[in-house]
Length: 86
Image (cartoon, rainbow, N blue to C red; front, side, top):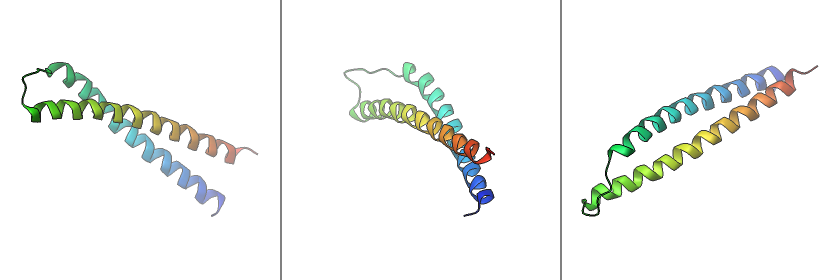
């Protein structure tokens, strides 16, 4: 793969990971706002309680995903920087 083509591919990966970072960040913000509004009643319907558990798990997934996307963006930026050094 030519250097210019590889640089373009790295930039596309940065763009994709930045997009996913933005999407996950927005979803996490909405979820963080929603969770305190939902009660975890002992007598709640099992389906409702399972959904609460799923939302709590989803929060962890978003947080992990955000860190992963940030790390990938940093890595591709480093690779691009290395390619542009004389």
